[in-house]
Image (tube, rainbow, N blue to C red; front, top):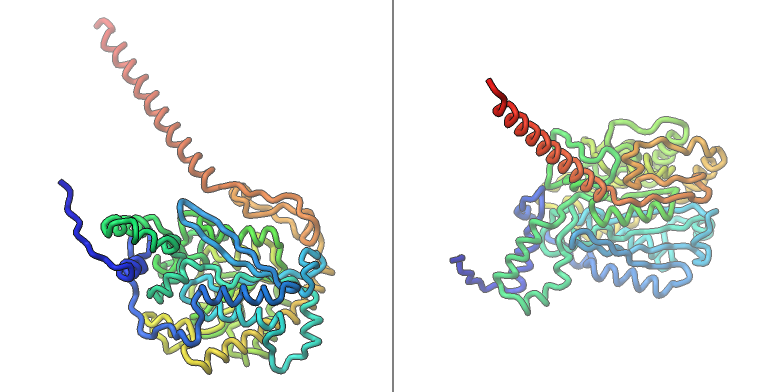
Amino acid sequence: MGRRCNLSLSPVMLLFWFASFSLVNGKTNLTRPSVTPINRDLYHTSDTLMEEIKALVHRHPDKLYMEVIGSQNKGYRVEMTVVTYCRNRKEIDDRSKYRVLLSFGQHGRELITSELALRILSILIGEQFLPNMDPSSLNNTLERFVIKMVPMENLNGRKLVEAGDLCERRNGLSIYLSNFNYYVRVMSPCKIVSMLKFCSMAGRGVDLNRNWSVDWGKKEKDYDPYEENPGIAPFSEPETQIMRKLCVSFEPHIWVNVHSGMEASHALFMPYDHKNTTPHGSPAQRVRLMLENLNRLHCKQRCVVGSGGGSVGYLAHGTATDYMYDIARVPMAFTFEIYGDRTGSSKDCFKMFNPSDLTTFNGVLNDWSAAFFAMFNMSTHELDVLHSKISVPSLEKLVSIDDYLNGYLMERSSRYGKKKEVLELGMQEIRTYFRLFLLSSVLLMFMFCSRISKSRRQIVSGMPL
């Protein structure tokens, strides 16, 4: 006879219980304690922030276009909002324009990054303005760009943060939260608990900035599975699959991955994250010089400039920026760290990753909005120089068959020409079938050898002495 379940759980209790679960290689972790709560007077919830962005798009359909892209993997569903800016929406597909892809909120606990996304959008469409910047000069710069922005890459992880797990950086289990009220109405408490336990075991808990293919899965001595779980394979997560497809279809010239929480507070990183070096050659040197000028003009020399692997204090494997530079061939691939509280404790996550007072909050948004638009302005000259010197053979790259089968690299006639082929094969499934094939082959070989051995013993035993 099974154990009798006698539980009386309110929806709030269940939601809190659910939010406290996160997956690390099949194990659950307790929520890390936090001291400073989310300042609701400063920060939007994920829902209200998306509503604000939707309202911006509705008010400025001539400049903004919004789409929601969905993806799913084994019951885990993701919806990602992508906003495209172009001063004349009819020119969105104009391949003569430089293309920018920006990602915010890749880690759930870094709320300030998505607030910066909203601020940049408001400036792009002219509802807010940058001090000390000539509007005509800004307009001339923006005429040359199409900007595609993901305001909140890790929406499910953000939902877990809003539910109370303020230290969560990985993707979440909140796909079930959309139907939570339904489950509470139609299911018994015991069944709900069983379902949530299953969710916690089958959920994600993957660091989206470790789930890309360049140097994926390598673990340093200080590897923390709670912080850096890379997933079961490169691009195993729907979020990174969507971002890769955006990169493949959009072919950006500039990529910026926006983060917060670094102890040094501010940084302008270029590749590489997985090794202690920056790319060689004149183009990379010019890009570094541009970042140093940006540091001088807008960071007041407070930003760390260089490779993430050489500056942040640890190596990171499987990052988006390394993929964008090494595989997707994005000429300018950056990671910006926009805030960090040096006095903050690792247990006080909201304070460590997000400004909690109005003055600092506005200062971060103002300073980094200005830095982004200055970067747009500087990059046009650098991209013009790069474009004038570029040759088709120099852009081709020999890759392994593993990369090719994974669909990690597009074959193209030219970096700025027509795309010839996009290979999108499910390498994860292929590997599974291949492993099954190998396993079945080994089993068949074992059975075959066993049968031969048994036949020989029978023949030997039947022979006369």
